[in-house]
Image (cartoon, rainbow, N blue to C red; front, top):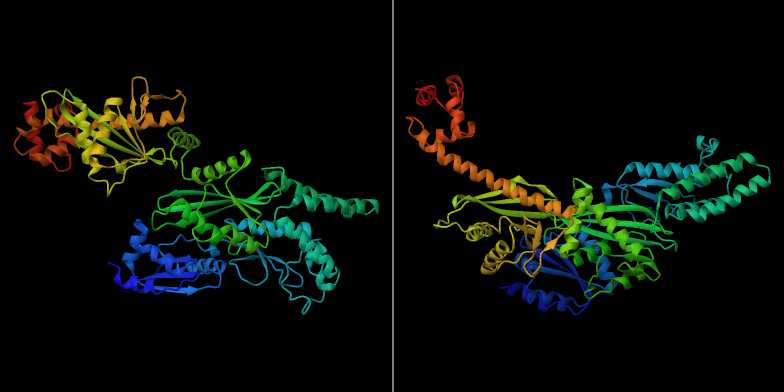
Length: 592
């Protein structure tokens, strides 16, 4: 099947490097790294995963780069992904859209300025920051507290004849005029670095010493300025959330997948304080597993960023042929610990991060609480964002109907509601067989209408068993299927003999009840419509000029035959689609 590609793969070298799959138009669709290029790419021929099959099916050619080491391969992979933006790779969106803080350590007298992209120019970058106001406020604060210059003079080669206004208002030490030595200025730069890294305590201690010295020397005005700077830093520190008391520097990474997008949140903890959060969105062209997304994000994210001592991730990741920890440690020049949370503080922070990512797309805290409770209650891998409910309605087997309602993020999505007119006809009504008919018809559309995270059946153990028969018969597995019985609000599960009974004030129970009741309402409304149609249709069809089309128009306008009887001639004439002569006939039929 992949004969042409197979020959190319067999000729790949047994070396570390990066490989690129190209489609029939020459476009790169996937970039991967390997410790052994031939062995790694050859594995695609025996890989039964949908992703591997898709890549081979769409590829016409393979190119590769040999590298001297695994670390070089990791770096090159990230660079090529950013360059080609392959559809089958997890891609971190370009940071150019968000502003950065740039500390120009490549200048003799560094400045803190706003930048739009990372450059390999010797400067130190911080961010990106989703809000431009954060960048402006930080630059202003640095001028006020540390008196770093903000001018664009190329010091010391070119400089102004006199100090600027910032010097006179106390926001600059005027290095352009030699009023501060280069050594003193670089001490200020080091303080700015500490500040941007969230190390406030160290700076506050230093300012306290300076304030005391000024006070001892009776320089009370300068001491007062130091006091104001200390207060500003203390206020900043108090606004940060205390996470731990061991002054660790670490990043916490959380992941949330929804609608073919992955949202990644990074919490920056410095000196035990949460100083910043960064959210990134990754468009997913395929159903990537969490492990793959986290691994790809780490490699791309830390390519141009400061690497902390500890990186905490929400789940274990496989390292394939590469040791990511070794790569991060080599890049940092010190040991890096990549691990799961090990204490309650870290676990709570990851939970807070997940809530941070999810709650923005939900309507209320109550909905969030219900979905999280459902996840924990049923041991689901992910938060169940979608629920679909089924119900049957009939009057002694007559006008039997079924309904399917769909809830997304805790709220009805009426565009995905479906109703079913039951075809099953027997002398004695059988709700179980009716439910099975509805489920079979619903499952025929599973390709165009995928199943929700939770399937909810209105009923008890019998209804659930009937539903399971259909699923087993067709060979479809659901993430979770349950039944909710109205009498005692008992929740039945397929492999559990006893039902679950939740507290009456449970958010999860309230949400399931809402879905169940909405499915019942939708089924009842359809049942009543059919019943009304059966009663009204024979009467109206006797009137000359009233066929199926005009009957439907009248049905949409009136809810009962009594309403039609009471309608005036003018009202009947004003109904769109009903001609004047037909309106007169309807009026005369009911009014003699």
